[in-house]
Length: 110
Image 1 (cartoon, rainbow, N blue to C red):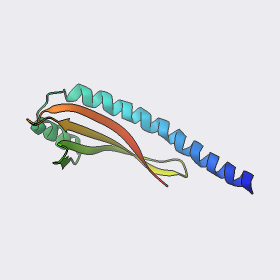
Image 2: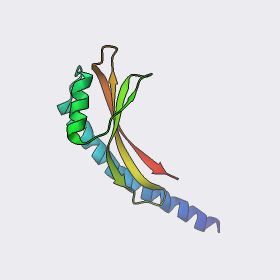
Image 3: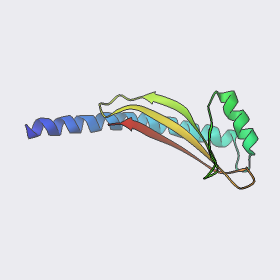
C-alpha cells in the first residue's frame, strides 16, 4: 500500500514538473518580449496602452504601487497542477514611472 501511495505521489510530482518546464519557456518568452517593449522609466500610461493593445486586463495595487496582468494561461498536464498562469508585475516609482518588472509563472495546484 505504501508503494502505491509513493508511486501516485511521485507520478503526480513528475507530471507537475513536466508542465513546469513549459511554463518556464513561456515565462522566458514574456520576459524577453516585455523587456524589449517596455523599458525601465516608461510612464504608467504607456504601460496601460501597451497592455490594452495586447488584450490584457491590468489591475492596480495602490498600496504597493504596481500594475499586474496575467499575460498567458497554460493548461496543466499533471494531476497536481491544473493550470499555470504567467503574470507580469510592473513596479512603479512615486512619479508613476516603471522602476522594475517581474514576470513569473504560478500554478493552480492541489
